[in-house]
Length: 250
Image (cartoon, one colour):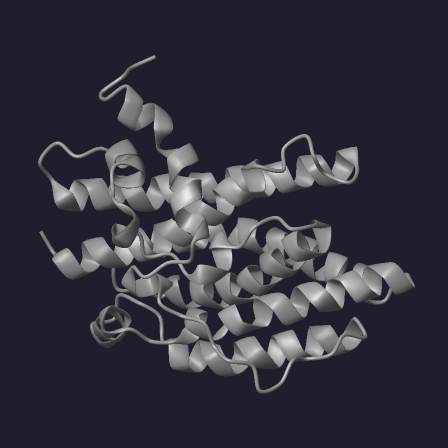
């Protein structure tokens, strides 16, 4: 088994898994019926991407491993998601800001992964990119609508941007694993992504009449297994059935 490839697949899948779960928590709680359904569909898209990554990861792991075991039967420090996707659904502005900040990164990441030398990763990226283009359109339009909306929506959106901005650097911080995957042609070049990512974010925030936070301390560690206090609570919910009823079948 290629252990580096396996761990890279976990890194790609864990972001979608945890963000997808966060969005699933909003099912039935959206500010309008249309938005509620849209957020639920985003969650379903992300879980579909997770399945593709984790089916491949289970195949790499061998030992009759399944996608469910990869998703649910790891300890907290074994998850490699960025801290951004763990952040709570404080209010609708936080949900939209978190989604946009991830989508803006995700679309650039997938564009590069489409060119991966690993044919399976390239195929997953090509399929996922079509979905993520919609995600990005949805979240970016809402950022502008809230930022350049009422006094209250603008204030709440600025609070959300200020709160989440410290988590953005981690998305494009290159770990040793990501450097290895880049050099062998499997993974993306985060140094290239980083430049476009912050240019795109700054441009959209300007269009939304929102301030770009400056001199913000960067939070990181999630991609190396050092997580916020939120992930443990997420996993307690996410893993309950699998751990309470091992090997269960429907």
